[in-house]
Image (tube, rainbow, N blue to C red; front, side):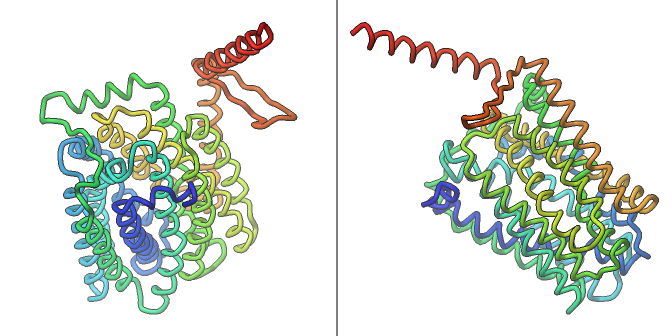
Length: 441
């Protein structure tokens, strides 16, 4: 089996991968349908209303993620995931029935978005940490990369299907179909072989456990750098469902089908980035910073594209850069974190990653409505370039990083941390000693 897909040789992971792929397709369909419902049916193309809907869906992450991470460290993760999948399915079905009955109002969509956000806040940390139970530790990076591939394959399929379904049968049926897709994840979780799960340590109930997770992160400058970079990019740059809807509708005069296609094209780059990530054995902080810088350049170019076609093409490198950054950040934190506090650390990461959306979406929506959608994308580009540059300069100074460029040998660009430099020196000394011994002999 190819190294890219090596985690799929484990039965439990195959079940998880297949179930999650189906559910993720439904989730992306609902995201497109929800934004389109708010933008075109419940308001007069209000970017602010779409931003508020997105903010409400992600706001609970700010409040609930630390407790959700603690819950993920304490309980049976598989059972907790079944519960969250049921909750998301029920909410999707409820919104679908409301829309199909013709009684949907904007405030009701806000309520459903907030409720879904509460369930998602609990689901996020346990979903991230559960992967470690499905594969051996040396395959964790590969499994995280394939999870991202599944998510972005769904992003490739979901928006396009949603656009076609919205045009054919309306937004209500998209929500109902999404509710059904959660059954795939529930089925896969119930069919897993418990004896083949890799046991992960659980934490007994005690005082001060939330502070313990926060203290752990505060003592890890590498995790803090990752969180700052991802937090800023997520706040102002990762608002594609909002900015793409505004560009398609306001800038290019397109309909739901063309809006859905933009999400699918973006996923081409994301899926490529995920598959490349699955081949990396050990991502590092420098990849997160470099990908954030690349994201800033790519989104700046995308904001300047004059036509729908060129804008769609420019989405591909944006998807590649954003997915590389997110996957590298996720895998780096998981692989370097003590399993005892992994749930809490990942919860704090999810709080920064997803919790930034309620802050950024209304701001980006206001910028798009006031100054145009191109500036809504441009603010994300500028923010990404600034935070990536700042993080690189800080790391260079504080971590004593050495950067070398080799014209004739690979890798051309070599970044060494103090530990890497010491290891390289020791290796060279060892090689020299071996050569000396061979000469003497």
